[in-house]
Image 1 (cartoon, rainbow, N blue to C red):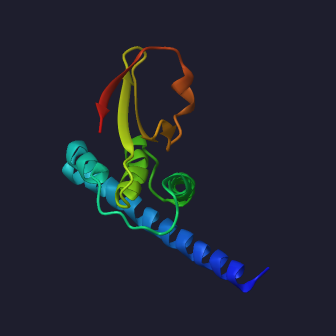
Image 2: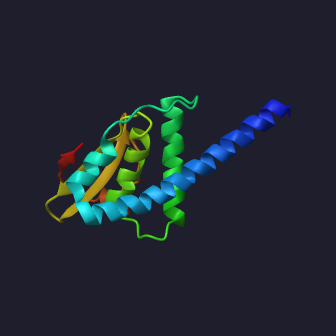
Image 3: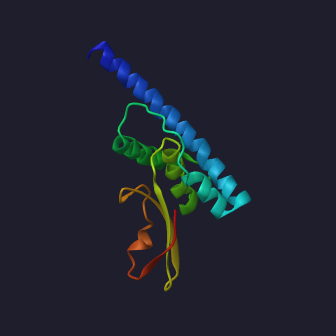
Length: 144
């Protein structure tokens, strides 16, 4: 293995660790913001695009990295996992880097069920709950 390859691996490992820490902290802050300011203001903040920070990866690679890191953060976080902050986390993280992710809340009337999810180019960034496979008609309540 060449020294350049080892250096690239270390840089990528450090970058992933910093992204993990950033996502961990922001999951907590998003949950606090939801309680303090409500759903509408928090969704608006988390989904608005910001200036792009180019780190040399393609959008697809960065989105898959974000999805993996989000799942890792949720395993280690002390807060209970709720679908709204879990879905807003990758939306905020990607929007901060200039990548538009879609936040959607869908509902079903009987039996009542509502769920928030994040998508990027038709790819789900968050996992649906296991009971989501129950039959029923779903209606989009919010799309941002």
